[in-house]
Amino acid sequence: MGLRIKVVLWVLVLYLLSGAVSLWFLRSQVDSSYLELESKVVLDDFSRVLRSLDDEFLLLDRVLLEWSLWEDLYQHQRQPDRVFAQRNLTPESVATSGLSWFGVYAPDGDLAVNLASPADAGLLLPGSLSPAVQSALSRGLLARKPGSRPCGIVRSEDQLLMLCQRALLGNEARPSSRAAGFVAVTDRLGDRVAADVAERSGLLLSIRPIEPTERLTGEAVAAELASLTGPGPLRIESERHRLNLRWPLRDINGVPVALLEASWPRQIMERSQALMTRVSWLVLGLASALALGIMLVIDRVVVVRLARLGRELDDIQLRRDWARTVTVSGRDEIARMAGGANHFLGVIASQVQALEQLSQTDALTELANRRCFTERLDQALRSRQRTGEPLCLLLLDVDFFKAFNDRYGHQEGDFALKALSECLAQLARRPGDLAARLGGEEFALLLEQTDLDGARHCAAEVQAALRARGIPHEACSGGLLTVSMGLAMAQAGDTADSLYLRADTALYRAKASGRDRLSE
Image 1 (tube, rainbow, N blue to C red):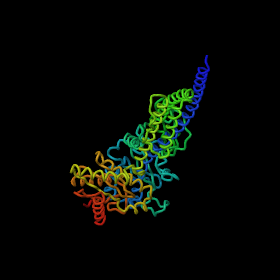
Image 2: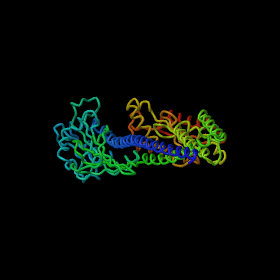
Image 3: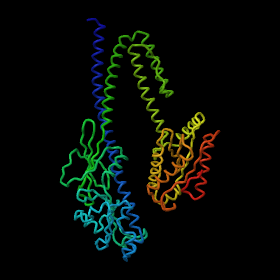
């Protein structure tokens, strides 16, 4: 056996051994990192599910807050008024408020008002609740619950309900010691709520009643997950392609009455396996190339080509020009290395492009930001010049938004902006439409191939959709959050600045003439 063959065999053996050890170590490290990442993402996603579910309770609590601070209801509880009760305390008024049941408990625990919406009269509340829950309601324990929202889950036979209770104060200035009793409201916790939470969280989930003695499967996870539905714990059952997440929903007395189940696809681990497969093949290819390179190292052609490849990669890294490719050609191992480098450069270029797309999105509302809006407006004007199709620009400004933040807080202000952005996103469905947040409380809706009548119709839909959200705002007429809008249609010779200026001027007229209206 010649020396050259021995060198080749030893090189191959050493590289195969080192490659196998490296792959084993790399796989163990990658699997560990991806499992840790998967656990973090699972907890983040499920936290979003719990926050979305808590948001449903917050919406119910807002309705309850209006009832508990109603001065006329307070006076009626102190001194019963038959006319007031006939006009305001009816099953229809409960249904109009979006509730399934409304009750007022006197300070001594007697149920003074007991109203169910016509659709929920069959629930027979509160008699169908457990004795422990009825006792807690009559004593106002939920209203006195410290440190969190006075809300929770109750069960009426096979029906799950969201329940909130507050002291009946009539106004915020009155101390709790002078409460006229306790107001309690419920709403169904059913398929509609599950669908809303699933849409906001992006996970497939369901909510079903359970018996307190039912045994839950899955491994309990030690994680700090706070929710109005109880302390958990979160249980995870692992399958190859998905994780089954289970969270027990507890009633106001801490008894498990329902189970929140969610399915989480294991895309991260699947990507990890795919990545390791590609890396394994890449390592084997590089090992083969390096083994052959050692035998041909005296060949100047190899040295020259490797040096050229290194210089080009250094230049790409120095200039950060990831769209470039290395120009080393051929059909040998060095060319394959160059192809691998070009593959990674392509991956980097695509990731940079994805980051640039993220830079054009508003972080709070997930609408287009001003940078994206400016680019699209220029493109739309150029398209209009070529095709002659109509183009309208609608500018929107939330009315008295500073007062809204001062009154309700910045968290509620962010919620209001998200609600308006959702209304705009629902309208911007066509490829040529663009909903954008320009900054603060100012938004824009760019409507290609839309004339003034169509744009007016879109403006009316925005107002109707925002009004349907029912976001309270004392500074606005009607007590609900409103927007002022300015509309402009592109004309011959218009530039982006001139079209925007006309729409902005129209918006100024709308605000100056009373707000909550459209001006052209």
